[in-house]
Length: 391
Image 1 (cartoon, helix red, strand yellow):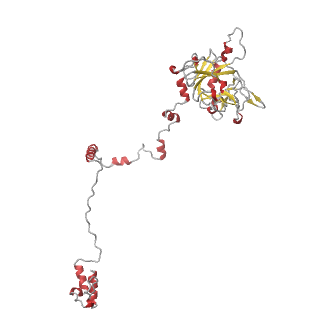
Image 2 (image 1 turned 90 degrees about the horizontal axis):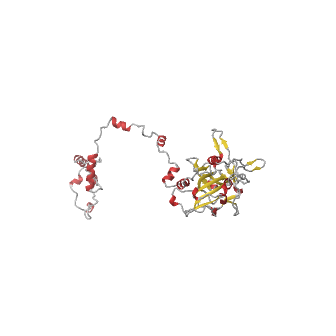
Image 3 (image 1 turned 180 degrees about the vertical axis):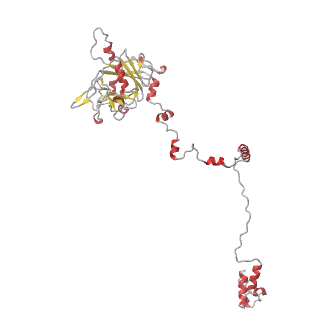
Protein backbone atom coordinates (compact mmCIF):
# COMPACT_ATOMS: atom_id res chain seq x y z
CA UNK A 1 0.00 0.00 0.00
CA UNK A 2 2.81 2.39 0.91
CA UNK A 3 4.54 1.62 -2.38
CA UNK A 4 1.37 2.33 -4.37
CA UNK A 5 0.84 5.70 -2.67
CA UNK A 6 4.41 6.83 -3.34
CA UNK A 7 4.03 5.80 -6.97
CA UNK A 8 0.81 7.76 -7.35
CA UNK A 9 2.37 10.93 -5.90
CA UNK A 10 5.22 10.67 -8.39
CA UNK A 11 2.77 10.19 -11.25
CA UNK A 12 0.78 13.25 -10.24
CA UNK A 13 3.94 15.37 -10.44
CA UNK A 14 4.66 14.01 -13.91
CA UNK A 15 7.62 11.96 -12.75
CA UNK A 16 8.38 8.38 -13.10
CA UNK A 17 7.90 6.42 -9.92
CA UNK A 18 11.02 5.18 -8.15
CA UNK A 19 11.07 1.64 -6.89
CA UNK A 20 13.77 1.18 -4.24
CA UNK A 21 13.91 -2.57 -4.40
CA UNK A 22 14.25 -2.68 -8.17
CA UNK A 23 17.31 -4.56 -9.43
CA UNK A 24 20.23 -2.54 -10.70
CA UNK A 25 20.06 -1.59 -14.43
CA UNK A 26 16.30 -0.98 -14.29
CA UNK A 27 16.34 2.63 -13.05
CA UNK A 28 13.92 4.86 -15.16
CA UNK A 29 16.46 7.68 -15.15
CA UNK A 30 18.79 5.56 -17.16
CA UNK A 31 16.40 4.91 -20.08
CA UNK A 32 14.67 1.83 -18.70
CA UNK A 33 11.28 0.64 -19.87
CA UNK A 34 8.37 2.87 -18.74
CA UNK A 35 6.15 1.59 -15.83
CA UNK A 36 2.76 0.12 -16.55
CA UNK A 37 -0.34 2.30 -16.58
CA UNK A 38 -1.39 1.19 -13.13
CA UNK A 39 1.45 3.19 -11.56
CA UNK A 40 0.20 6.44 -13.18
CA UNK A 41 -3.48 6.30 -12.05
CA UNK A 42 -4.69 9.15 -9.89
CA UNK A 43 -4.47 8.68 -6.17
CA UNK A 44 -8.20 9.14 -5.67
CA UNK A 45 -9.06 6.16 -7.76
CA UNK A 46 -6.69 3.96 -5.81
CA UNK A 47 -8.19 5.08 -2.47
CA UNK A 48 -11.66 4.30 -3.73
CA UNK A 49 -10.47 0.92 -4.85
CA UNK A 50 -8.85 0.27 -1.43
CA UNK A 51 -12.04 1.16 0.48
CA UNK A 52 -14.14 -0.95 -1.83
CA UNK A 53 -11.73 -3.86 -1.35
CA UNK A 54 -12.06 -3.72 2.46
CA UNK A 55 -8.80 -1.94 3.28
CA UNK A 56 -8.97 0.65 6.08
CA UNK A 57 -6.62 2.67 8.23
CA UNK A 58 -8.53 1.67 11.35
CA UNK A 59 -6.95 -1.09 13.48
CA UNK A 60 -8.71 -4.35 12.80
CA UNK A 61 -9.55 -6.57 15.76
CA UNK A 62 -7.32 -9.60 16.19
CA UNK A 63 -8.81 -12.83 15.10
CA UNK A 64 -9.83 -14.93 18.07
CA UNK A 65 -8.33 -18.35 17.99
CA UNK A 66 -9.62 -21.20 20.13
CA UNK A 67 -7.28 -22.02 23.05
CA UNK A 68 -6.33 -25.65 23.47
CA UNK A 69 -7.84 -27.30 26.55
CA UNK A 70 -5.39 -27.82 29.45
CA UNK A 71 -5.13 -31.38 30.60
CA UNK A 72 -5.02 -31.91 34.39
CA UNK A 73 -2.52 -34.55 35.40
CA UNK A 74 -3.27 -36.54 38.59
CA UNK A 75 0.06 -37.38 40.33
CA UNK A 76 -1.46 -40.49 41.92
CA UNK A 77 -1.19 -43.84 40.22
CA UNK A 78 -4.15 -44.60 38.00
CA UNK A 79 -5.44 -47.49 40.12
CA UNK A 80 -5.18 -45.51 43.38
CA UNK A 81 -6.79 -42.37 41.90
CA UNK A 82 -9.67 -44.32 40.48
CA UNK A 83 -10.29 -46.08 43.80
CA UNK A 84 -10.24 -42.85 45.79
CA UNK A 85 -12.57 -41.13 43.35
CA UNK A 86 -15.08 -43.96 43.61
CA UNK A 87 -14.87 -43.86 47.43
CA UNK A 88 -15.43 -40.10 47.42
CA UNK A 89 -18.42 -40.40 45.14
CA UNK A 90 -19.99 -43.09 47.31
CA UNK A 91 -19.33 -41.41 50.67
CA UNK A 92 -19.90 -37.74 49.85
CA UNK A 93 -23.29 -36.54 51.15
CA UNK A 94 -25.74 -34.82 48.92
CA UNK A 95 -25.46 -31.07 48.83
CA UNK A 96 -28.00 -29.34 51.00
CA UNK A 97 -29.90 -26.48 49.47
CA UNK A 98 -28.64 -23.03 50.38
CA UNK A 99 -30.91 -20.87 52.39
CA UNK A 100 -31.71 -20.46 56.06
CA UNK A 101 -29.53 -23.44 57.01
CA UNK A 102 -26.48 -21.88 55.39
CA UNK A 103 -27.11 -18.54 57.02
CA UNK A 104 -27.41 -20.26 60.42
CA UNK A 105 -23.96 -21.79 59.98
CA UNK A 106 -22.50 -18.37 59.33
CA UNK A 107 -24.24 -16.78 62.29
CA UNK A 108 -22.13 -16.30 65.47
CA UNK A 109 -22.39 -19.18 67.92
CA UNK A 110 -22.05 -19.06 71.70
CA UNK A 111 -19.52 -21.89 71.46
CA UNK A 112 -17.17 -19.83 69.29
CA UNK A 113 -14.83 -17.36 71.04
CA UNK A 114 -15.96 -13.89 70.18
CA UNK A 115 -12.73 -12.17 71.29
CA UNK A 116 -9.17 -12.81 72.35
CA UNK A 117 -10.24 -12.76 76.00
CA UNK A 118 -12.92 -15.35 75.29
CA UNK A 119 -10.33 -17.54 73.58
CA UNK A 120 -8.01 -17.25 76.58
CA UNK A 121 -10.88 -18.08 78.94
CA UNK A 122 -11.53 -21.29 77.03
CA UNK A 123 -7.91 -22.42 77.25
CA UNK A 124 -7.27 -25.41 79.56
CA UNK A 125 -5.70 -24.50 82.90
CA UNK A 126 -1.87 -24.61 83.03
CA UNK A 127 -0.21 -27.71 84.43
CA UNK A 128 1.34 -27.12 87.86
CA UNK A 129 5.00 -27.86 88.47
CA UNK A 130 4.46 -30.98 90.57
CA UNK A 131 2.25 -32.58 87.92
CA UNK A 132 4.73 -31.76 85.18
CA UNK A 133 7.64 -33.25 87.16
CA UNK A 134 5.59 -36.38 87.87
CA UNK A 135 4.88 -36.78 84.15
CA UNK A 136 8.62 -36.55 83.51
CA UNK A 137 9.27 -39.32 86.05
CA UNK A 138 10.74 -37.12 88.79
CA UNK A 139 10.40 -38.46 92.34
CA UNK A 140 10.88 -35.95 95.16
CA UNK A 141 13.11 -36.75 98.16
CA UNK A 142 10.02 -36.73 100.39
CA UNK A 143 8.32 -39.37 98.22
CA UNK A 144 11.48 -41.49 98.29
CA UNK A 145 11.51 -41.39 102.09
CA UNK A 146 7.85 -42.38 102.35
CA UNK A 147 8.38 -45.22 99.91
CA UNK A 148 11.51 -46.53 101.69
CA UNK A 149 10.79 -46.44 105.44
CA UNK A 150 8.11 -48.16 107.53
CA UNK A 151 6.70 -46.92 110.83
CA UNK A 152 8.88 -47.39 113.91
CA UNK A 153 7.50 -50.20 116.13
CA UNK A 154 5.70 -49.21 119.32
CA UNK A 155 5.21 -45.59 118.20
CA UNK A 156 2.04 -43.65 117.38
CA UNK A 157 1.79 -41.58 114.24
CA UNK A 158 0.65 -38.01 114.92
CA UNK A 159 -0.48 -37.02 111.43
CA UNK A 160 -1.22 -38.78 108.15
CA UNK A 161 0.40 -35.89 106.29
CA UNK A 162 3.63 -35.95 108.28
CA UNK A 163 6.22 -38.68 108.98
CA UNK A 164 6.23 -38.08 112.74
CA UNK A 165 5.68 -40.53 115.62
CA UNK A 166 5.77 -40.49 119.43
CA UNK A 167 6.75 -43.31 121.75
CA UNK A 168 5.18 -42.15 124.99
CA UNK A 169 6.42 -45.14 126.97
CA UNK A 170 9.99 -44.80 125.74
CA UNK A 171 9.81 -40.98 125.86
CA UNK A 172 11.06 -40.65 122.28
CA UNK A 173 10.02 -38.76 119.17
CA UNK A 174 10.75 -40.09 115.64
CA UNK A 175 10.80 -37.86 112.56
CA UNK A 176 11.75 -38.94 109.03
CA UNK A 177 13.64 -36.77 106.56
CA UNK A 178 16.46 -36.72 104.02
CA UNK A 179 19.91 -35.22 103.54
CA UNK A 180 19.41 -31.73 102.08
CA UNK A 181 22.98 -30.35 102.33
CA UNK A 182 26.36 -31.84 103.15
CA UNK A 183 28.61 -28.95 102.09
CA UNK A 184 27.29 -25.66 103.45
CA UNK A 185 27.55 -23.06 106.19
CA UNK A 186 24.75 -23.77 108.61
CA UNK A 187 22.04 -21.81 110.36
CA UNK A 188 19.97 -24.92 111.10
CA UNK A 189 20.72 -28.57 111.57
CA UNK A 190 17.19 -29.48 110.43
CA UNK A 191 14.26 -27.60 108.91
CA UNK A 192 10.82 -28.55 107.57
CA UNK A 193 11.10 -29.96 104.06
CA UNK A 194 11.25 -27.38 101.26
CA UNK A 195 11.89 -24.39 103.52
CA UNK A 196 15.51 -23.49 104.40
CA UNK A 197 17.26 -26.52 102.98
CA UNK A 198 20.08 -24.41 101.49
CA UNK A 199 21.45 -23.90 105.03
CA UNK A 200 20.30 -27.12 106.74
CA UNK A 201 21.66 -30.66 106.74
CA UNK A 202 18.30 -32.45 107.10
CA UNK A 203 14.89 -31.71 105.60
CA UNK A 204 12.18 -33.09 107.91
CA UNK A 205 8.81 -34.39 106.69
CA UNK A 206 6.88 -32.54 109.40
CA UNK A 207 6.05 -29.01 110.47
CA UNK A 208 7.85 -27.45 113.42
CA UNK A 209 4.59 -27.01 115.35
CA UNK A 210 3.95 -30.76 115.01
CA UNK A 211 7.38 -31.58 116.44
CA UNK A 212 6.60 -29.13 119.27
CA UNK A 213 3.42 -31.06 120.08
CA UNK A 214 5.30 -34.38 119.93
CA UNK A 215 7.91 -33.20 122.43
CA UNK A 216 5.20 -32.05 124.81
CA UNK A 217 3.54 -35.45 124.43
CA UNK A 218 6.67 -37.25 125.71
CA UNK A 219 7.08 -34.89 128.66
CA UNK A 220 9.65 -32.36 127.41
CA UNK A 221 9.65 -28.96 129.16
CA UNK A 222 9.43 -25.84 127.00
CA UNK A 223 11.74 -22.89 127.71
CA UNK A 224 12.14 -19.37 126.29
CA UNK A 225 13.73 -18.13 123.07
CA UNK A 226 16.90 -16.11 122.79
CA UNK A 227 16.57 -12.37 123.42
CA UNK A 228 18.64 -9.39 122.34
CA UNK A 229 17.68 -6.57 124.68
CA UNK A 230 20.32 -4.46 126.33
CA UNK A 231 22.37 -7.64 126.55
CA UNK A 232 22.32 -11.15 125.11
CA UNK A 233 20.02 -13.59 126.96
CA UNK A 234 20.47 -17.21 125.78
CA UNK A 235 17.69 -19.61 124.91
CA UNK A 236 16.39 -21.89 127.65
CA UNK A 237 14.51 -25.18 127.81
CA UNK A 238 14.95 -28.89 128.46
CA UNK A 239 17.98 -30.34 126.62
CA UNK A 240 17.15 -32.71 123.76
CA UNK A 241 19.51 -35.43 122.50
CA UNK A 242 19.14 -36.05 118.74
CA UNK A 243 20.19 -39.28 117.05
CA UNK A 244 20.30 -39.95 113.29
CA UNK A 245 19.65 -43.33 111.62
CA UNK A 246 20.16 -44.27 107.96
CA UNK A 247 21.19 -47.08 105.60
CA UNK A 248 24.46 -46.65 103.74
CA UNK A 249 25.08 -47.46 100.07
CA UNK A 250 25.82 -51.10 100.97
CA UNK A 251 22.50 -51.41 102.80
CA UNK A 252 24.11 -51.39 106.26
CA UNK A 253 22.29 -49.71 109.14
CA UNK A 254 24.13 -46.70 110.57
CA UNK A 255 23.47 -44.35 113.47
CA UNK A 256 25.25 -41.36 115.00
CA UNK A 257 24.82 -38.45 117.37
CA UNK A 258 23.52 -35.50 115.28
CA UNK A 259 26.11 -33.19 116.86
CA UNK A 260 28.88 -35.06 115.03
CA UNK A 261 27.56 -33.73 111.70
CA UNK A 262 28.00 -30.09 112.84
CA UNK A 263 31.53 -28.64 112.84
CA UNK A 264 33.01 -25.42 114.15
CA UNK A 265 34.10 -23.39 111.10
CA UNK A 266 37.81 -23.73 110.34
CA UNK A 267 38.38 -26.65 112.72
CA UNK A 268 37.82 -30.39 112.98
CA UNK A 269 35.85 -30.00 116.21
CA UNK A 270 32.24 -31.12 116.21
CA UNK A 271 29.43 -29.55 118.25
CA UNK A 272 29.53 -30.39 121.96
CA UNK A 273 26.36 -28.73 123.30
CA UNK A 274 22.89 -30.28 123.19
CA UNK A 275 19.94 -28.37 121.77
CA UNK A 276 17.30 -27.00 124.12
CA UNK A 277 13.52 -27.07 123.62
CA UNK A 278 12.67 -23.38 123.18
CA UNK A 279 9.17 -23.66 121.73
CA UNK A 280 9.19 -20.76 119.19
CA UNK A 281 6.22 -18.34 119.33
CA UNK A 282 2.98 -17.38 117.62
CA UNK A 283 2.43 -14.36 115.37
CA UNK A 284 -0.90 -12.88 114.31
CA UNK A 285 -1.17 -11.28 110.91
CA UNK A 286 -2.86 -7.90 111.41
CA UNK A 287 -4.25 -7.88 107.87
CA UNK A 288 -6.31 -11.07 108.04
CA UNK A 289 -6.12 -12.11 111.68
CA UNK A 290 -4.52 -15.48 110.96
CA UNK A 291 -2.13 -16.91 113.57
CA UNK A 292 1.17 -18.47 112.49
CA UNK A 293 3.63 -20.70 114.34
CA UNK A 294 6.83 -18.90 113.42
CA UNK A 295 9.23 -21.86 113.37
CA UNK A 296 7.24 -23.38 110.47
CA UNK A 297 9.18 -20.99 108.24
CA UNK A 298 12.31 -23.11 108.74
CA UNK A 299 13.77 -22.61 112.23
CA UNK A 300 13.23 -26.15 113.55
CA UNK A 301 16.61 -27.24 115.00
CA UNK A 302 18.95 -24.24 114.88
CA UNK A 303 22.70 -23.71 115.29
CA UNK A 304 22.36 -19.94 114.88
CA UNK A 305 20.24 -18.06 117.40
CA UNK A 306 16.69 -17.20 116.31
CA UNK A 307 13.92 -15.83 118.47
CA UNK A 308 11.55 -17.96 116.38
CA UNK A 309 13.42 -21.27 116.90
CA UNK A 310 11.77 -24.49 118.01
CA UNK A 311 15.13 -25.78 119.33
CA UNK A 312 18.23 -23.64 119.72
CA UNK A 313 21.72 -23.70 121.22
CA UNK A 314 22.06 -22.13 124.69
CA UNK A 315 25.10 -20.08 123.62
CA UNK A 316 25.54 -16.99 121.51
CA UNK A 317 25.72 -17.91 117.82
CA UNK A 318 25.24 -15.25 115.16
CA UNK A 319 22.99 -15.71 112.15
CA UNK A 320 24.92 -13.10 110.10
CA UNK A 321 26.31 -14.70 106.95
CA UNK A 322 29.85 -13.44 107.58
CA UNK A 323 29.79 -14.53 111.23
CA UNK A 324 28.36 -18.06 111.07
CA UNK A 325 30.08 -20.36 113.57
CA UNK A 326 29.19 -23.78 112.13
CA UNK A 327 29.30 -25.69 108.86
CA UNK A 328 28.52 -29.26 107.75
CA UNK A 329 31.05 -31.97 108.70
CA UNK A 330 30.99 -33.28 105.14
CA UNK A 331 33.03 -36.52 105.42
CA UNK A 332 30.65 -37.85 108.08
CA UNK A 333 27.40 -37.11 106.20
CA UNK A 334 25.86 -39.62 103.73
CA UNK A 335 25.04 -38.60 100.13
CA UNK A 336 22.46 -35.94 99.43
CA UNK A 337 18.92 -37.32 99.28
CA UNK A 338 19.61 -40.26 101.61
CA UNK A 339 16.52 -41.08 103.76
CA UNK A 340 17.18 -40.59 107.48
CA UNK A 341 15.23 -40.99 110.70
CA UNK A 342 15.75 -38.65 113.64
CA UNK A 343 15.16 -39.78 117.21
CA UNK A 344 14.65 -36.96 119.73
CA UNK A 345 15.04 -37.89 123.40
CA UNK A 346 14.57 -35.37 126.26
CA UNK A 347 17.52 -35.43 128.68
CA UNK A 348 16.55 -35.76 132.33
CA UNK A 349 17.30 -32.59 134.28
CA UNK A 350 18.23 -34.41 137.53
CA UNK A 351 19.26 -37.82 138.71
CA UNK A 352 16.36 -40.21 139.30
CA UNK A 353 15.42 -41.29 142.81
CA UNK A 354 16.80 -44.56 144.14
CA UNK A 355 13.51 -46.37 143.81
CA UNK A 356 13.14 -45.34 140.18
CA UNK A 357 14.82 -47.24 137.42
CA UNK A 358 17.91 -45.72 135.91
CA UNK A 359 16.52 -46.10 132.35
CA UNK A 360 15.10 -42.54 132.03
CA UNK A 361 18.52 -41.03 132.82
CA UNK A 362 20.36 -43.24 130.34
CA UNK A 363 17.74 -43.32 127.56
CA UNK A 364 19.23 -40.30 125.84
CA UNK A 365 22.66 -41.91 125.90
CA UNK A 366 21.48 -45.16 124.34
CA UNK A 367 21.97 -45.23 120.53
CA UNK A 368 18.99 -46.49 118.51
CA UNK A 369 19.07 -49.95 116.93
CA UNK A 370 18.10 -51.21 113.50
CA UNK A 371 14.70 -52.39 114.78
CA UNK A 372 13.65 -48.75 115.10
CA UNK A 373 14.13 -48.12 111.35
CA UNK A 374 12.39 -50.93 109.43
CA UNK A 375 12.26 -50.76 105.66
CA UNK A 376 9.16 -51.30 103.59
CA UNK A 377 11.25 -53.44 101.26
CA UNK A 378 12.54 -55.83 103.89
CA UNK A 379 14.67 -57.74 101.40
CA UNK A 380 16.57 -54.58 100.46
CA UNK A 381 17.78 -53.94 104.01
CA UNK A 382 21.28 -55.20 104.58
CA UNK A 383 22.38 -57.16 107.61
CA UNK A 384 21.85 -55.30 110.87
CA UNK A 385 24.79 -53.76 112.64
CA UNK A 386 25.41 -53.85 116.38
CA UNK A 387 23.82 -50.43 116.70
CA UNK A 388 27.08 -48.71 117.63
CA UNK A 389 27.42 -45.09 116.47
CA UNK A 390 29.05 -44.57 113.09
CA UNK A 391 32.59 -43.31 113.04
